[in-house]
Amino acid sequence: MEYELQISLACDIGCFRTINEDMILISGEKYRNSSDDFSTVIQNNGRFVAAVADGMGGHNAGEIASEMALNHFDDFIVNLSGNLIDNDFRFKLDNEIKEIHRVLTKHGYANSACNGMGTTLVSLLTYENRIYLVNAGDSRAYRMRNGILYQLTTDHSVQNKNNDYTLPSNMIYNCLGGGGDSAFADVTELTGKVFENDMFLLCSDGLYDELSEEEIEAHLRKFSSASSLVNAAKAKGGHDNISAIVITIK
Image (cartoon, rainbow, N blue to C red; front, side):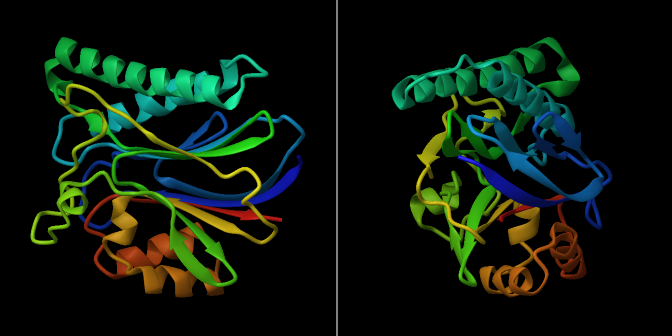
């Protein structure tokens, strides 16, 4: 397996927040309050990870939680032993999600200013010529194919769980840290389901809360740029931090 990826990313504080609790990870490089556009090639058996972490709004030290989670997750992918079959990979990944949750919770208990801190995590990664999507929380992953946008992840929101849209959209029942007793991640294998010119969007809720799926779809058709998406969300209000990664398969 060999993929050429065109990557566009942007992580922005938005128009009202004083701290950016979002953070983006691209294979060891972390981004906050910045943007970039570049290409990379994933060689046979090469490892790649792209992720968005949204530190929990309203909790203390969300910016610390998002960075700690991405550091741990990146180290896990880099140092994971090779030749694991799918079931063993999923087992280790599940343990890692629980470990990140434990580390964030412990840090919060030990530091009163960080008590209750938490973060979402959505990631697209490669391991042993396999492609996985990982999601904990309400950050999202979309796929754009033939001009049609499709949401790949399920929001771990109370609103979505109860199918009750009178509930606040930012109430979530699953995240890393955040004071919960446990955490989990949805893991979806995409191997064999990724095609040339497919476009993947990873984003925090600061993007999709401002832009409808129809607006995101129309924007990606025209620009395929994370910065353009973020600027469009800011133009609509930019009430939260906004992060987006656009990955195009070449």
